[in-house]
Length: 487
Figure 1 (cartoon, rainbow, N blue to C red):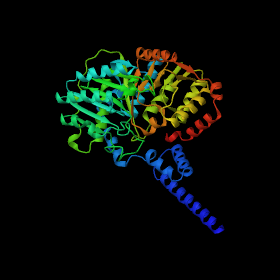
Figure 2: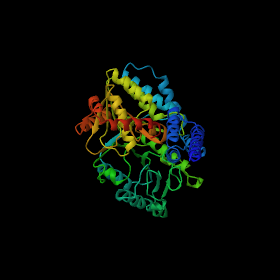
Figure 3: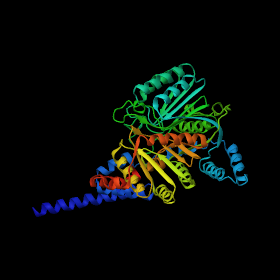
């Protein structure tokens, strides 16, 4: 009996040793930030065997060739015109108006890190409800004359997804150039055959960068989380809505869906068109499927709006976390208030410290998050950081009227960001995202009025209320927080 137990003990020690060696090799063979490195080492060490299955889904990076494909496509930048615009800002006399100075520095940041044009005189409409958004979007697609480019993380095979597909098939049959780019994981359950008829009538559809289905591509990280539509190179859509019945409030689990999306007419569409072409070309293996003639998509747009904006894209192919840097810039520029809506609040240390500093400096920092989870671990981590920030003077709201999915940030009534990027590690480091950064007091004022209206459907969660949460709930929040760099 003693010999048997000795064999079992030595066998267990051998398994633990082999698991630890494999964990160290797996984690350190790929370059990643320190927080994610230690988080994965913790998972692989504490969950022998099964931890490697989790790593296969959540931890593997994109192959170098795929990253190079997406990186090479970012060269579609109209460099000469951008350099001329950058020089204008560099040579501009220092403005006396502090607002103009803040605009100028933020604009120059995005010109430098993302080659992003500042476009003026845009018309911008804000949508917060799915029925109104999809009616306008479908009307614009139905009126398209030359091209319809669609890129979404999620396009479901449900009622609204089929309505969109049918409309795109009709436009392709009319001779309109129709291209659809979707994420194979986000569009779970939608096989390539879903778009067979679209292809038969002359349209195009493909998964972003990845394999043709999740059966072959089960990597949960490095997804195309962007939501872009460009119609005739003149009308653009960007924001938080995907294509699915749940985004119309038709799924009882979530109830009414509260999101924020923009419709843009003007030069701001160029940034969305450039991003779509880059993503499309990176996803095509054959040259004949790529877009090489750009000029038809960048025609002059006659519009007399008053909204200045830049579109900024970020992803794991770039060394800088560009949208996160934009968030930091806005937070650090605030003088009066910072109002944020995000479904997932899992900030890294830089964002967390910036929010703490702002709150302790007397700035009115308010963050609105959902009152219900859609991902258990993610929501517990969100609660952990909400509790931390509440203890530092940030006002935390739980939105009660359905699920809050909006990704917005408003600063001092002067600047705002609306797009696909959440305030979390995944959007900063792991996913491909795109946001519009807006410099228009009228538009920002409209976004802030929406925020104030949402407060009526929310409740404040105070530090005392967080402190009185059940101990087991706080333990789950703390455990989830340890995994935050990889959630």
